[in-house]
Amino acid sequence: MSTSGWIICAGGSLVLAIMLWPADGTRWSLRARAGRRRRARIPAELPAAAAAGSAMIALDLAAGHAAAAAIGAVVCTSATKVLVSSRRRVATAEGVARFASVLANQAAVAVTASDAVARAAPLVSGPVGAAAVAMAADCESLGVDIAAERFAARVPSAVAASLADLVAVSAEGGGRWAETVTVLEAEASQTAATARLFHGRVAVAMPTLALVVLLGAGLVAGAGQVATDVGAWLAGAQGAALLLAGAIVMAALSTRVLLPARSAAGHKGLQ
Image 1: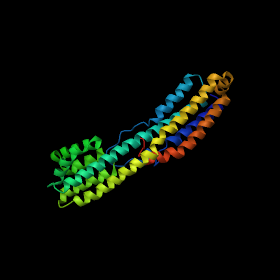
Image 2: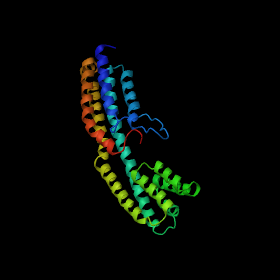
Image 3: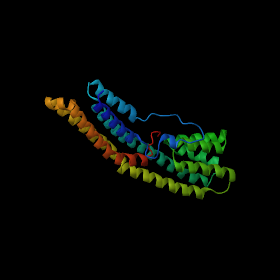
Image 4: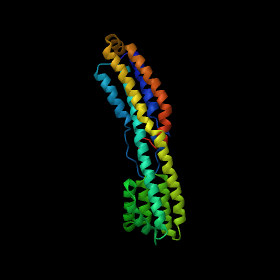
């Protein structure tokens, strides 16, 4: 590969690194020092970038074309993941709010915390409902403390963790805890409302961003197919440099939207 090719590859790699950099830090800085090790997962952007770049190489195009295609693939994949993560976040927040609501009602009449959980769990649907049912079963077989810990691990929500802690503390100390559950119910409802607002105003716009990138790539490819001279120029070194520069500008503009959006949606490559 020539010197210009290596420079193009280095520039494309730098942009990809910026796009893939976690919004809240690196995986190593965020990794817990103690406790069970989490299984490493490959971000979907990496296979997408590899596939797009390999397709350009298979078409006998230059490294600049491959880097530009990889950057576009990363932007589209990141936008799609924000939408998916936001939908999952809304479903979780609504499930936790529903569980907190029915648990608050049962806490006023149940004898024990485990009894309240057993009565409330069947009234919740979805993944949170399944986690609540498992929590009720764990209360009978393993104890409330372990059941609460497992519920908090199954449901990725701060409110769910607080709810699990409240159940565990109430089981140990007894007494009236319906008032505290009511407070958590209000917090869970507010969290669900915030998640719905973000999804309706930000996350649903992510497919539009991906569509704009795809349409731009389609227009360039279509122009190259229709006009032979244009296609030959785009396939050359100058065309590759222009396409890569355009991809870098597009990625820089998209990053200003994608990074805050994926951070707000709870997307860190692990969700």
